Length: 122
Image 1 (spheres, helix red, strand yellow):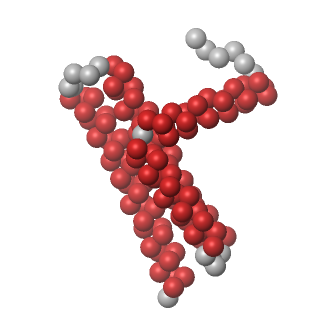
Image 2 (tube, helix red, strand yellow):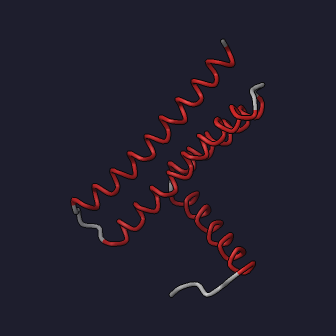
């Protein structure tokens, strides 16, 4: 059933759904909890570093991207598990692709951090 809310009510409901999603990720996904701790530390370091605004945005944005992709991967895994517990090639493929997306986001974040720190420390 489609949500009929509009305007400010829709925004408030959407914020509530987002909050529920974050809580579900925290409670059910160990990878999310680990990456969230790393993200908080990375954001603190990014704020502390004496770098320009663009570099700081890249540092923080790259780790937030990892969190976004992890939540999407968790959603894919949840829906695949909801459909059935027996092995199916397409289910395995969907989970593997979600995992690959997280890995690529992490590689991107590491590349951004290495590039910025290399310039900052050089």
